[in-house]
Structures are given as structure tokens and as C-alpha cells.
Amino acid sequence: MEFNSDQREFDRLFRLLEPDFDSLEGSFRRFRSKLLKFFAWRHCEDPENLADDTIARLLKNVRAGQEISASNPYSYVYAIATNVFKEYIRSKKKRGITTDIEDLKDLPLPVVEPDCHRECLAQLSREKIELLERYYLDDEDRNQIAREYGLSLNALRLQVYRIKLELRKCWDDCRRRRDKLRN
Amino acid sequence: MSADLDEHTHDLMIRFLLGELSEAERIAIEQRFLADGDFFDKLLAIESSLLDDYLAGRLSATQMQRVEELFESSLAQRRDREQTRELIAELRQARHEKVTAAEPIVTPAPTVDDVHSRANPEVADVPVVRPAWNIVRIFAWRNGLAPTLAVLVVLLIFGWLVSRMIILNSKKRDSEQQRLALEHGNQELQKTLDLEAQRNDKLARQLEAEKEQRARAEDLLAQSQARRPGEIATVILSPIIFERGTSPKVVTLKPRATQFQFLLKFDPDQRFEQYNLELTTFDGARIWSKEHVGASQAKRGQITLTLPASLLTYEDYRIELRGLSANGTSVHVADYAFKIRK
Image (cartoon, rainbow over all chains, first blue to last red; front, side, top):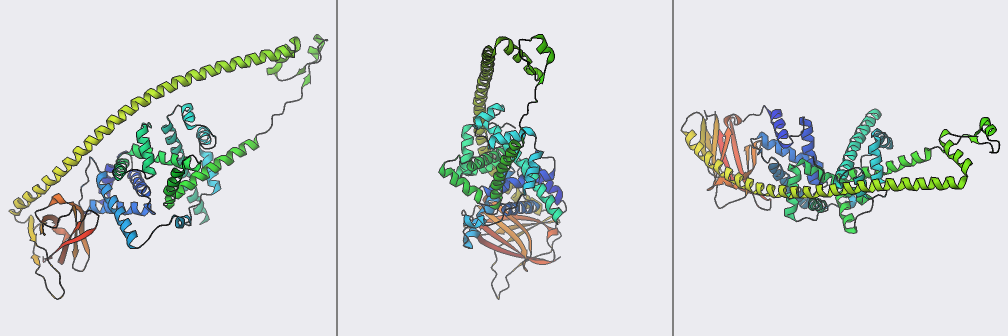
């Protein structure tokens, strides 16, 4: 067993899991986002931590010689994630922790400054802004909007979702820049 | 990537996000979105759309409650919800600013056309306005206001009727095309789903068969390689009980081999779906571990463990075997001990 080729192993692993991305970083981000949503959709309070825990175990096992099936690599990931989830539930019960949604409401959210909102919206193309305005502000039937854009309803949803992702990334970058300037 | 989604899959996704699926259905969706990037993207878009409907108050009372639970469950989900809310507010603000900033149209004061008034003395001075209105004004002055208005109205109605016909025909064609495309898409997706289900079953069976073959091959390999000195050292270890005040008998190894193969014996009545193995020193330092060893690799009360000799130094070692019960509880099965003296 060799321990001196971690980087290559991880590269191989993440490209096996997410072959559609050009870079290791892209594959890793996509992989992590899936795990994050796995735990979020199971209503876990801290899906990011659980996702990272799952990744750590996967990497440890791969380093220890665990082979991942090339035809269905996610089956092993699913098994680990499920175990992590079960341990999380057991640990909660053991510590007698019950989560009250009201408690979560008190936790502060990262703030996106109004200037960042404005700046990022201004960077969108006119067509995208018009689409968002029609989708969110006008009381139009969404099927109608989709037809006028020559899209199915699901394609319209996907389009709006992608624009929101673009804005989210812009907001995060803007907030980081402003935090740096302040510090 | 095709963005089309048949109604059944769309419905499944909504019910998955609202927590309304059975356990088996939920597992199927989870496994699918992990393995299938397209499916994952569609599920994210559906979640986003559900949030939009929630914020617009378009959901039933039960759905509203479930969506609220979903987006209150973690900081990350709450952040998504608040960012969408802020986006809508920003769009509203931007539109309002656009509307209030629009300037009213000011028509320039008309100037007198002396030539025109001289040529037609009976016609009052016609103010000179923008060139676009000249034809209308001249017609109106020559024929009267009422006929002019009537002609304008007729022209407008005619234009409107023509444009409506064109739009309706176009919409009709688009609807028909979409309906055909959707039908075709539905059939294709159903075929794909059926094929995938069959393939999954087949893969599961193959995996089980391969695991058994591998276990048998490992046993055979252990037997054949043991005849070649200096390569693999095979060691049979029996369970040991660590009790205060006693010195359990421990196997001492002086290897010249490159690998150790440990045949760990345990009570065959202690059967589990999966096993975990952990190698530590007697001081408790963890050296190596392996999780999720399947039951097919633990046959007749024996598990085979192969480790490189380079992993082990001049030390006393302990191997712990634990079983995972069906409810996920980890149960101690056996301890083993050996020493390395190089």
C-alpha cells in the first residue's frame, strides 16, 4: 500500500465521480454540492459539516485501499453518507438534542449589502433582467411566459435557477471584496 | 442537456422535496440525483421554483408548511430563501426607479408655414409639426376631421386583426409542436427508466457474485503464496481476551515477508451484514482501519486481512473486529493481538 500518491488518487476519484468537469476543483465542488443537498433535503441542521465528514471518510477509505466501482461510483458514497446521517441522528438522540426551528431563526444570516444586489443585477443582460421581472413581478401565467420564450415550463424554471446561481456567485464575490476592503 | 421533464417525474421530485415519499422512493431519488448530474440540476430547479411559489403564496396550506420546514431546517437553506426574497425586492425597486425616472414627452411648439397659408388663403394657418403627422393633418384639413378619424380607426382595427391572426396561428403551431415533443419525451423517458431499473438489478447481482469470487480467490491466493517464502506471511489469529492482571498469549512475528495475511477467526454465530476492522498499537495509536467489509468476505467464521509489512514496525498490535447490525449499531465481535519483532 502506498501513501505517497494522495493527490493523484483524489484526482482520479473525483474525476470518476464527476467526469463532466475539466478541473479537479470543479469536480470536487460539484460532488460536495450534491452531498450538501443530500443532507439539507434530509433536514439536517448542519449539512455542510456532514458533507465534509462524508468526504473525509471517503478519502480515508480510498487511501486505505477501498476500491470504488467505476460503473456506479456513487453507490459507495451513498453508503457512507447514509452512515454519517445515521450517526448524526444517534448522536442527537444520545445528547438529548431536539432542534427547535425557532432556535435556528435566531442564527444570523450572512448579509448581502444592497449595493452588491444592485451591482450584480446591473451586470445581468437586459434579456435576463426582463425574464426575472416577468417571472417574479408580473402576475403572468408561467406557462404563458415559457411559451413566449419558446421554452417548456421546466426549461424556464431551469433558466431562472441558473440566473439566480449567477447572481448568488456575484453576491458572494462582492461581499468578499467589501469585507477585504474593510479589513 | 434536455430540460424536459415528464409529469410523473416532476410530481415525484415535488413530493421528494416536500418529504411525502415512501422510504424506498426517497432512497431511489437520492441515489439517482447523486449519480445523475442532469437529474440533480432539474431537482435544484424544481426546489428553486417551489421556493418562488412559496414566496408568492401560490401553494396550498400543507405545501406552504412543508416548504417552510425545508427552508428553515438549516442556515444554508435559510440563506437561499432570504437571497431570493432580496432579489425580488431589488427587482421591484429597480423597476420602480425606472418608472419614476422616465421623463414626460414634451411636444415642441408649432411654427407657422407662410407658404402654405399663402397658397390656400381659405385654410387657416396650418401649424408646421413633425413630418410624420403631415399626411394626417393635410387629409384632415382637406376632408374634415370625422372622415379622417374614421379612416384611422378602420386602419387600426384592421392592423390589430391581422396581427392577432398571425400571433394565434403561430401559437397554435407552437402548442402542437410542444405537445408532440412532450409525448415523445414521455415515451423515451419511460423506456429509459425501465432500462435503468433492469440494469440496476443486474448490477446488484453481479456485484454480489464478484464479491464472493473475490473472497474465494483471496483464500486460494493465500494458500498458494504461502508456499513462496519471503513474499507473504500468513498468520492465523484467534480471538483474545484482554483481562486485567493477565498476559494473554500473543503471536510474535519476525517477518522477512513483504506482506502479512491475517486470517482472523471468530464465532461463526456472530453474523452481521457488515464488519469494521481497526488496527491499533497497544498504546491506542490508530494505524489502519477498514469499514463496510461485507458479509460475503466473512465466511465460516473467518475474515482475511492483508497488510503491507512496511505498515508495521517494532510494536505490539491489536486488531478489533466490530459488526454493524441492521439498525446501524456497532457491536464488538473480537480482539486479536500480535507483536512485530524485526
